Length: 326
Ligand SMILES: O=CC(=O)O
Image (cartoon, rainbow, N blue to C red; front, side, top):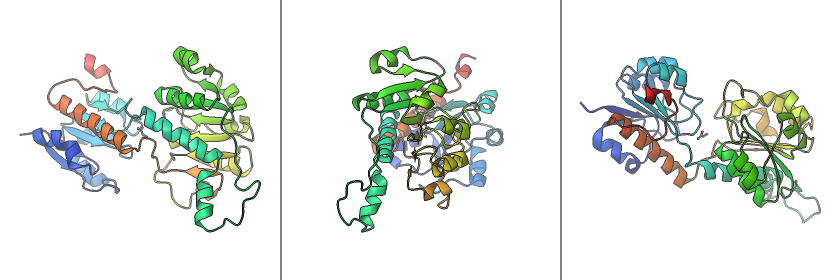
């Protein structure tokens, strides 16, 4: 019998042709509605491979239901939706999609920074709502980006790609990271500093760190109080690195000036969430890597990893690397 692959979201037929040629491919046929938990649990029972997206919780319970499961290929660089420890204990390989989305996500992050600073979304809504009466000196005036200071928290590949864009805008680049990045310091002129210095000196504080036990709710009331009152906070990593209530309070009390958010603690965020009521918040629906080219490349990596693992080869982008050496 052919091994079974379950794909949790509808994908274009041509992007999964390689899998269909060799395996029994089952797919949740909805593009925008997530697979219901009971369907996922029923499907995982017979699956050797799961193709997942960031909104699918791959819990210990799901992994134990997947008695034949060999691989979870997650269509994202982040894998905080997966209990990697539980997967590793069961010998299930976890794969992600690094590198291909680096530049695309950096474009969106810097675009969100520009949009928030220069009030682009608010201005576009203003004109479409017929509110434009006349040119006036401070109509929708925002903050400059060029030659300001950007502070990047989490200098991984995407952080460095954001820094590269900031360099083009003549910005002073500060960063804080678990390890120093000598190459980024040399090539981009990025300066390493403590987290507190980054908060105190930056005009734009950009959260780029993955969500872990250490980074959960890292951006809290105390952290916002250390930022400049003119600071703009940008988050395109994971919603849960921010205490959203603390961010809301910081915004309404002018502790900081604005926020650009591509990610939220609960996604999709509900329409009546207080953050969405604020004019100085630019909110996007988790589209960091969402260009057609990059999303196709991410699918391709997942497909390739599944194909390789189910035919006895090593995957290209493995998260729980300890499993290969066993
Ligand atoms: O959020 C998306 C990703 O982690 O790739």
